[in-house]
Image 1 (cartoon, helix red, strand yellow):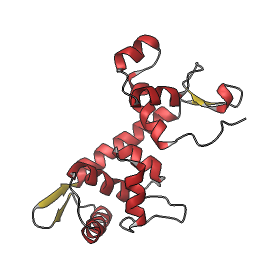
Image 2 (cartoon, helix red, strand yellow; image 1 turned 60 degrees about the horizontal axis):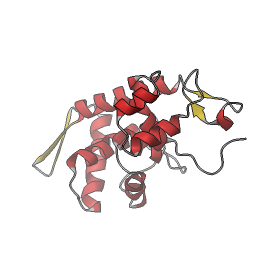
Image 3 (cartoon, rainbow, N blue to C red; image 1 turned 90 degrees about the vertical axis):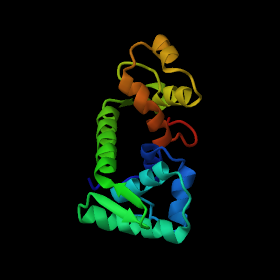
Length: 177
């Protein structure tokens, strides 16, 4: 899968803060695909591994790990060994991310953005309920059961992906007019 992701999308897909993703770009650990910055699928794999490891390496070690991952993904390797004690199973990370991104994109395709509905905010199909509203409610810690009671027409995928959507596409400035 060779897709290009914004830093916010990458952060959402790998469950890291955008600040951490931008830090990796700023320290030149991750090499953006373009000037905008946009990140490759290999960068997502690296960021997901970083999240799972939950251990802080120095910048030179993180850079070396990223370069090893890029090379391994290009060569379709199934594992990457780093520093004699650390082995990453790339197939499982690749599969997990690929499935998540594929399901998310399919779900996102069903959303509605219409300037005449809710000022152009993205809403769930056949409703005036903002995806950002539900994502923010979930992020604040409201239970899924309570949300399902209030909005019984939302699917499990809606409740799974609304917080990801909210993080991947944050609202900036005024709503569209």
